[in-house]
Length: 471
Image 1 (cartoon, rainbow, N blue to C red):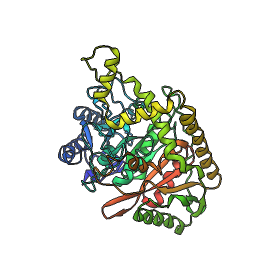
Image 2 (cartoon, rainbow, N blue to C red):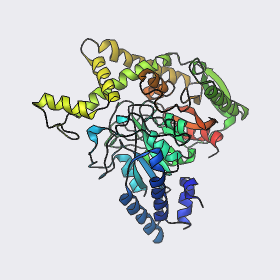
Image 3 (cartoon, helix red, strand yellow):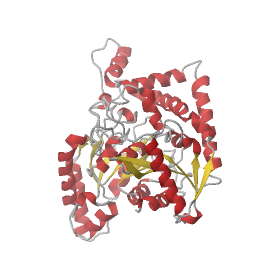
Image 4 (cartoon, rainbow, N blue to C red):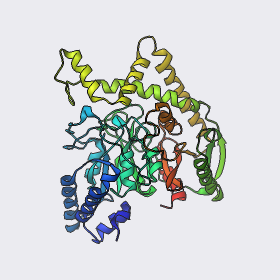
C-alpha cells in the first residue's frame, strides 16, 4: 500500500482497521521529507519530535479502542505564519528568524484536539507578500510538477508539500489569492473561506481585513473535512463568526452558474482559457444553467486591493521595531537608529516596498485620495457580487491568468507579479469564499478552476466542485 497516495479519509480508514500505525505513517512522511525537500524546499523546518509524539498518542487511543477523529494521526504541514507553540515562526523573514511561538493559533488548537500530526512549517513569501514563494528570505520553493517553475504564493510551500506527497494536507493563509493560486499551480485543492468563518487568532497579520486561514488538500472532500474542523466562532477573534451554512446537497440540474465575460479578455493564457471554458461546458452538459453576469467594478480590484493591503501591512508591520521581539540591531546610536537599522536588515525588498506604498497611502493629504477612495470602491465590488448572487448559485472563473511561470521570470517585475491576483483578489475584497479545484493540465502544468460562493456557503461550493473532481 502506498501511504502517500491516500487521502485523509483513506488514511483514517487504514488507521482504524490497523493496516498501519500512526507512527508508521508519520515516519514514512518524515523520511519522504528528508528525501524530497532538498529538491522542492517546501518545508522551512521539520518538527520530528512533535510529530512522533502526536502519532504515538493516536496509536494509544486506537489500542485503547477509543473513537478517533477523521484527522487523528493524519500528517499535516503548517504555513510558517501560523503559530505552533514551541516551534519557530519566521514568516520567512530575517526579522523573525529566531522567533519561537509562545502559544498555539486557534486553528492549531483545533487540529491538536482532533489528534492531527504536525510535520513542520512550510516556506512562504515573506510575511505572505508575494505570488511565487520567491520572496522568502531563506530560499525559493519549487513546483513539484516542474522544478524550473514556481509553486505560486504566498502559500507555495504548503501547496508544494501536498502536491509532492510530503504531507496529507496543509494549512495556508489567503490575503489576495495566496491559497487558491498555489493550489492551481501545483494541482491540489485550495479553499479560501468566507471572511470570519475561520479564526485568525495566531495568524501573523499581513492585511487584517483580508487575511483568512484555509486548507490545501488532495481532494475536495479532504478540504471539506479540514474546514469543518477549523471553522467556527472564536472569542479570541472578534471578526470570527459561527457556522451558518446548511449541509444541503446540490442538484446539478437546478444549479445556476454565473460567468463574467470579462474574465476571458486579453492577457489570459489561451490554454488556461480553453481549460476553464471546457470545465464550464462539462457542468452545462451535466444539466447546470450557465448565465452571463456583470461585475463592473471588479476591473478596479487590483489597484483597490494593493492600496488596502499595503496600507494595512504598513500598520501591522510597525510592531517589528527591534524592541518587543524578533531581530534587534545593537549597533545603534539611539532609539530611532534601532528602528531604522533593524528594519533595514530584517525586511526584504518586497516587504519594504509594500510598507512604503501603504505609509504613503495613509499619510496626511493622501488618505482621502487613496485609502478612503479604495475603501469606497471595495464596497461597490462587494455590492456587485451581492447582486450577482441574487440570480446565481456560484460563480466560475479562472484562478490565475497563466499556469505556473518560471523561477525568476517575474521576480524583478512587481506589477506583472501583482496581476497574478486579478481573479482572486476581488473575492478577498468582498469577503466571499473561493475554492480552487484542478480542471486540467497544459503539458505537466496544472490549471485550476475557481468556484466562488455566496457568504458562508462553503458546503454548496464543495458539492459543486465534486461534480468535477469526483471526490
